[in-house]
Image (cartoon, rainbow, N blue to C red; front, side, top):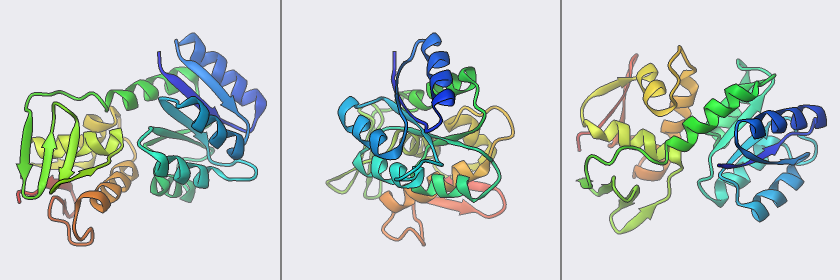
Length: 225
């Protein structure tokens, strides 16, 4: 039963979502602003955070950046619109996924389960090296040289899927299905933002990637190095 931290400033919305998620088996703590959300995050160590972007005081973008800086806890942002700059800003701040409000508890339940599954992918191979990059699929660890690379569950799943078949080209839609479990025409911004964050962690020069390469007009492929 995952522990969920819901940061939502509208009391009615927050309590309604919390009640619905509890009926789906989640333990939910609600914080009504960014400052209380960060305090609750530090104290409760949740498994996942549901974060409204439009918060009083410390806004959702800053809350997202601070939570992401503290570690790899998954973040699903709640946004009033799905086609504006808020989505891009939230993804760049480190969110793993987003849901457009008004959000239904069953939709959030499905997204929560999908995000948490990303931390437990298949372990068909153990340890593999790609140049300086070492991927241990059994331990779910990545290192570059002798230095561990801290990845979020979504970044890790993306790297595992891409590196499973080096040289294969994946469309953004294929990656949405494999990594985000979005089996409908999803938002390619999720993929592009995650690729940017992953490159920043594993590439020597993110602007000239060696591992995660763009196939213009189609998607991405891994190496080969």
